Image (tube, rainbow, N blue to C red; front, side, top):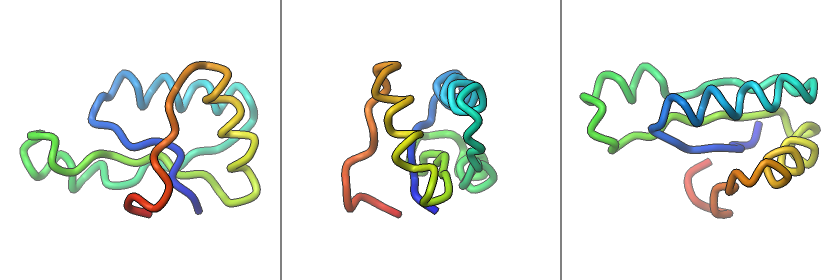
Length: 76
């Protein structure tokens, strides 16, 4: 799996999940529990991940929507 988004913004996460779902790409939300347990101070962002085969298509969907991708090599 590859991370396609890191964010503390629930609206952005929901928006990206909807974009990917419309494109037929399933995304998994990671770190939601940990992020909420740390008090929502922003130290631990939530992550959306897609399977490796869907990453190129998901990247294209987000690029067309103007959503920046996470930097390479920053937290899996």
